[in-house]
View: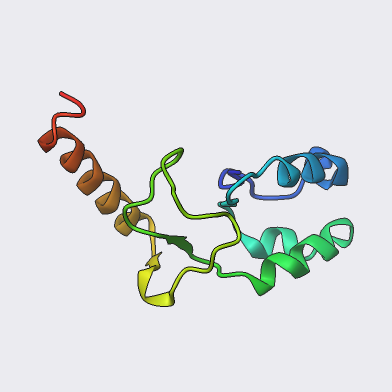
Length: 110
């Protein structure tokens, strides 16, 4: 769920029903991109933001897993040493570039 272009919380993002729908659709994981400080001060969103605050604030990936190809069960624990934390947009861009290069070199894309 991308909230990166949000500078302030408008009416539609204050509607808790919209959040419930967005959050309940996640099957294997949920990534929310945005500024926590923009949303954490909203009374209507306090219970949800409290839960988000307990979770990692960085993107965490398991290298080698791809959408639709994970053999890991949803409730299986991943060793901390298997998790890659993405620190910023530059690192994410580098990771996407490396994945694309792997696909090109393996012949998956031309």
